[in-house]
Amino acid sequence: MRDSVWHVVATLRGAEAATAMLGLLEEAVDAVSAFETAPEEWRVEAYPPSPVLTPDLAARLALAAAAAGGTLVEIGEEKLPARDWLAENQLAFPPLRVGRFFVYGSHYRDRVPAGAIGIQVDATTAFGTGEHPSTRACLMALESLARRHRFRCPVDIGTGTGILAVAAAKLLRCRVLASDIDRGAVRVARHNVARNGVMGTVRVRRAPGYRDRALRKSRYDLILSNILARPLALLACDLARALMPGGRAVLSGLLRRQEGVVLVPHRGCGIVLERRLVIDGWSTLILRARSAG
Image (cartoon, rainbow, N blue to C red):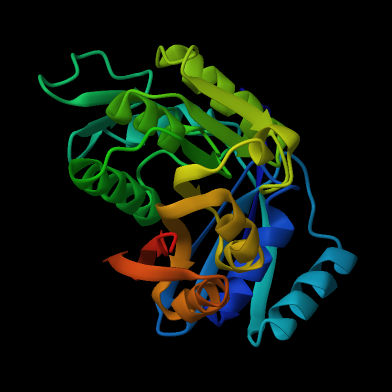
């Protein structure tokens, strides 16, 4: 348990401004989240291990919000009392049932329900514990696709905690390649792969998007990517090159109003929308590569 933790709170106008702030803060803090408090008004909260809100950072955050078409209304930082925030956070999140998947933390002591696919993931600094709408929708999309198609070569880009890679390995019963650009996320994902008993099935690599030798060796019939709208858009043509003809991609981590930002570049690379899932304003897109010929 740390002696103390710091709490940064910002109020912004515009979803894109909130997304930009998440991107700037995520590498400097232990945890960061954003939620809409009113139409077009967002609250971003971050928990750094030490004070981070210098005048320079505040100015950069304001500029980033403005560049994204929004406004940083207010931002502040305070020191919180010494508490084991992570342990409290874990206890605050009960097990979650998403279709056949049963997501639970290490504090859960009961059995996984009969017929369910158990996935043990604790709250960490890496993204993806099943609680967020985008992660839930990805799990739902994965199960739905698996009922209609047989996948044998899936990849998880931006794996975070590894939850989607573990889910794919257990549901599809095939080898899964997973990658993340963040060293900490790779470490967490490998730990979760081991604790879920799929070390022989899931391989986790540190890689920037699809630009990795191991990833470029194959093409994939299923791509999972739960990151953010802007990187999804930037990776559109890389995804198109990696996806087999007729293959599917599940893209998440974007707001409903950001769909166009992601869909337009994918259409330009030959990847079309098959259907979408929307939960609490967050969209998950199920895309398809046109079949050869």
